[in-house]
Image 1 (cartoon, helix red, strand yellow):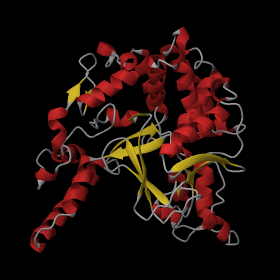
Image 2 (image 1 turned 180 degrees about the vertical axis):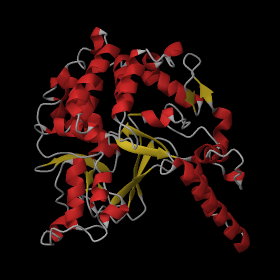
Image 3 (image 1 turned 120 degrees about the vertical axis):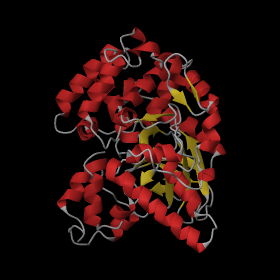
Length: 419
């Protein structure tokens, strides 16, 4: 969920004046980038283009400030780099696991996106978590893994971190929209940070909440029993982080702010060696007969995977992005985010020509939802993102009847109920 509500107040950890100082620093930092983060009255923070972009141009690429797999994805055996979420299984291994059929074979394996990384895979010798490369292992170690490494306790169900994660999993079944492990990793980053004041300022830069919205955000994450679940999570969190150094985070209000922070700003990430292989082989220039045979093979593999894994085809997780999190929604977006490298690097591309001074917007809705009526779009956005959209398309359709689209039904809105 990515949104900047309109009215800001004193926020995370009572750092009252940080936001103003951050905006100044960000403007200086962004001078190297073709955009500027500005605060727009009545709307909150926004990303404003500082140059012209044509359709298809890359506006920016950004590595996650922090990211990790969803808890249930790990439990279900989705193999991914513990740092960047790059798949750690070949396309054939991926398909066989998802279809629960070890006899399946995949053609054109020379186009397998994972094969070039096989020789680079490595592990943490202390706890056994896997990485796609030595670079990722070292980067993780520098940022958080010195603290986050659980060593021989990684498989110990009685370890406080595992108890916290298990508590979360029992409250938040798939499809997941966040994970408590993102907060765990943030705690480790904080403890390893050499400049803790600067780290807190970075966390503050993600926050843009208005009065009483934190309860709404947490309610959306945990459901109807959020108050009792929130209390249980908080207790487990405090048991996991008993050091005095974490005391700034272990008050009830600070923990709620952390939950709201990931609920509001975390960006879903999905990587799949099978999906990347399909893209590559679908673009091959091969004889028509061979092309038809390949397409039939792909359809067959998707059907077999779908029978066993259903919709859960991708390795999924979430991350926090300092730039990406500042982008507002529009029902007529001029940009789109994607993950073309099968890791946690997000790439923002222009969908339309963008002029200097124009706000850069993405859609928080998928293509099917965007095609629905204004009333339906507004209902989904208000239900899942807690705001009423006032984009140009919604304003243009403001006099349309307040009716749901013909292809909508109550179940659609129920399915969209998670953040």
